[in-house]
Length: 378
Ligand code: UDP
Ligand code: GLC
Image 1 (tube, rainbow, N blue to C red):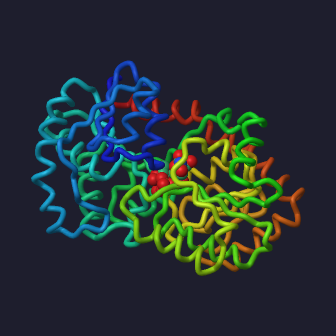
Image 2 (cartoon, helix red, strand yellow):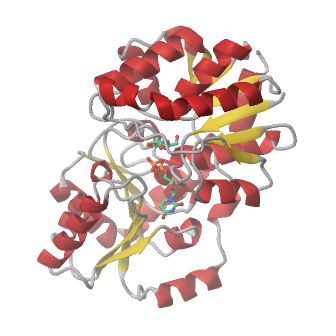
């Protein structure tokens, strides 16, 4: 099957990293069309997946855009649509991986009569999207998509609650290659030394810097933990959240935590960095649609504490394969950190169990087979 994958981002967000794994088995007969140039294009090229940037200018409509702003972006969208329609005729199926990709994919699907699959990576709720954006996504998916693949039950439920047709939807979790999360021990020692983490109890936070990802909650929790607890914040602002980045640095300075909170920026060595951690914290203040970092922590054999909402509650069972705390509650988070600090053996037993179950539940080979079976219907 020849697939035209569409994704609006040039950056490496979770949806893009997920698409990388989905597109791989089709690399000899498919194309990933992006709406902007960036590191995602280079990563696809490194993996020998054909990729093309299909837009000549950026499409500026955002998650919280109103109807006028959305209509205003129409001028930017038209050339991309024309381009996609031309290209789509050579392919058997259009696979839209983001919201803007859905808009363009839906129109292209209409004109080329190619089936459209929408991979829904978002919770279409008020917290995340404007009314206009939600309405556009749901209307287009209902009208043009043959299938909506939701990345969790939480995303599926929100889609249906927003008016999406339930019969279109199916849940497929992100897949991972467990082997990647077993890096060389010597690399880890070196990394620990380079980052000055030796002898510390390291709490890792792996996420783009954005207010709803809640890095500020972890920083706050650090004030309630003993001095040997150090946090590494891995990730950068991918979608223009510079103000939040400044706030985080200010918060660290105000709380005099400069020696205990390290900002590492965007990194490509996530498995190695996770291996330097004693605990991985997920702190999203709005429900997380899926939460790749939670699974990655499990595959790394590290205890993980996650905010109890959205997809995270499908991944973590408190006290069994990780810990759940109320979203936005630094006190609760600090309690889990302090428990893991004291009861290392117990939390490691939980982490070992998580590693074993996650390796099976999220194995990329099985997940890709599941997707192949779904796509084979069209
Ligand atoms: N990630 C990365 N480098 C960083 C920070 C994060 O490669 O510096 C990866 C992380 O390992 C995960 C993805 O980005 O695979 C983020 O996905 P997630 O589902 O956790 O959140 P999203 O950003 O997609 O909402
Ligand atoms: C989105 C979501 C994230 C999810 C990822 C992969 O970026 O925000 O929760 O893990 O897609 O599906």
